[in-house]
Image (tube, rainbow, N blue to C red; front, top):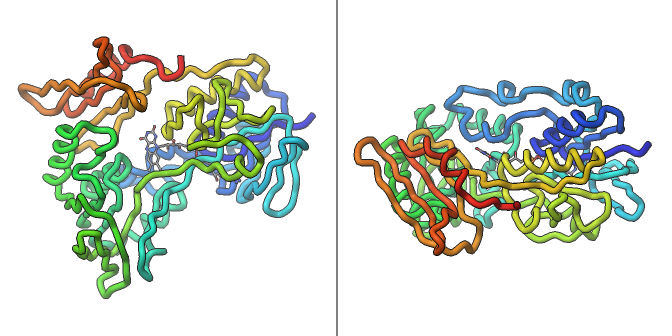
Length: 385
Ligand SMILES: Cc1cc2nc3c(=O)[nH]c(=O)nc-3n(C[C@H](O)[C@H](O)[C@H](O)COP(=O)(O)OP(=O)(O)OC[C@H]3O[C@@H](n4cnc5c(N)ncnc54)[C@H](O)[C@@H]3O)c2cc1C
C-alpha cells in the first residue's frame, strides 16, 4: 500500500500525524523533514529566555521517539526538491524517490530577509527554528547590546523576553511610528511602547536598517535616518513568508501561501497543505490555532470521512508580560470603527472593532482586560464557517 507522506516535522505535520493515528493505525505514514525532526512548541522561541530554557529544554521528543509514538517512518535532514503530481511521486535532494497515496505539504514559512547593505549583513540572525535559537543563545553569552529589526508582534515578544531576563541593552528598529502598528490601534500601541520603554527598551522608529558593518565593539548599524547604533548582536524579526516554491514548481496554485479549499486540498488531486505554508480559502494565518483546526479536519478526510475545516475566531495572546495583550484582528478589509474603554483603576485598554450593524468584528485587550478574551471571542464571527 502506498503511504501517506507528510513533508515537514513542525507543529502542523506532527499535529496532523497524531490526529490521523487516532483514526487510522494501519495506513503507512512517512514524514520527511529538512530539519532534525525534534518536536517542540515553536511559540516558546520568543519567551524561552525568561523561562531559562535552552533548545534542549524546549525540544520535547526527538524524531526516533516521534516515529515510535506515531508508528511512522520519519526521514530527517533530507530536503524534498520536487513533486510530480501526475506520477504521485516526490524526489529528494539525494535523488531518491517516494511514491505517495496522499501527500501533505506542511513545509512552514521562512524569515523574510531585508536587503541590508554592508559586509556584516550575513551576521544578522532570524529566529524561526530550534537551531536558530541555539545560535541565538550562544551569541547572547557575550552580548551587551542587541538590536532587533522589526517592531511587530514577534519583535516585541523578543524585546520583552530580552529586557526582562538579561542585562543587555535592547534597541528596536522599524519604519512605523509605533510598535505592532498593523494589528494594534495607535493608542494601545503607544501604551505597549511605553511599558517596554519603562523596562529599558530603546526605540528607533520611523527608520529602517540600511547598512551593517563590522566594528571594534561588534557592528555599526546605520539607519535610514542616518543614525548609527552600535549593537553586538542583531536579530531580524520582520516577518515570515510561506514556503511555496515546491508547490509552485509542481504546478499547484499559489498565492501568498499554497492555495487550498476548505478541505485543505490544493489544486492537485491527492495533495493537501496546512500550517504556515497554506492559504486556506483565502486565509494565510501563521499561528498555531488554525493549524490545529486544519489538522483535525484533514486527519478525518485522510481517514475516509471528508471533512471541511472550521475556523472560529482565534484570538492570539501576545507574549509581552510587561504589557499583557490579546489580539483578535478583524478579517482583512472589514469595515467598522474602533471603540475604546479604559480601566478606571488598574491598567489596560479594551478596544472593540465594531461593524456598521453593531456586530463585534475584532478586538484588542490589554492589561487587566485580557481576562475578557474568552467571553468576547464567542461574540466574533467565524473566519471559515
Ligand atoms: C518566534 C516565534 C514565536 C511564535 N509565537 C507564537 C505564539 O505565541 N502563538 C501562536 O499561535 N503562534 C506563534 N508562532 C507561530 C507558530 O509557531 C507557527 O505558526 C507554527 O509553528 C508553524 O508550524 P508549521 O509546522 O506550519 O511550520 P514549521 O514549524 O516551519 O515547519 C516546517 C517544516 O517543514 C520542513 N520543510 C520545509 N521545506 C522542506 C522541504 N523542501 N523538504 C523537507 N522538509 C521541509 C521543515 O524542516 C520543518 O520541519 C510563533 C512563531 C515564531 C517563529
